[in-house]
Image (cartoon, rainbow, N blue to C red):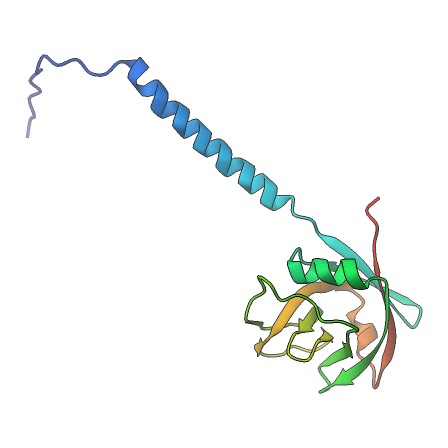
Length: 163
């Protein structure tokens, strides 16, 4: 099949007509890139947890609950009690904000969490299922085996200063 093109005599728009459209596209792409850069540069706080002289490190999420955890409570000395042979918990001295937090979470080994209904910090050393009101604050990077002991452990939570 052959298509014949018949000129209509109308001029196609010149390059000048496309300049405003091109300008808008460049602005939109720049905004998207800046948003991606800003998101990738979100603050990641790191903490050191000392248990029986052994140091664990953890990376915390950049959320309102986590920032509240840092600003108002750290450094913090806690006795973490065993709960259900799955996690170590301690009731925090004050409630943390749950603003913008998910309705619940499905924690895994190494997750540092806040259970809003009870107001306690929970560090999971075994996998667990979804819990309504559970907010993941961060994750232990190394040394989780130091929590897998019978009974309670004394733990010191400290912010690692950026160097």
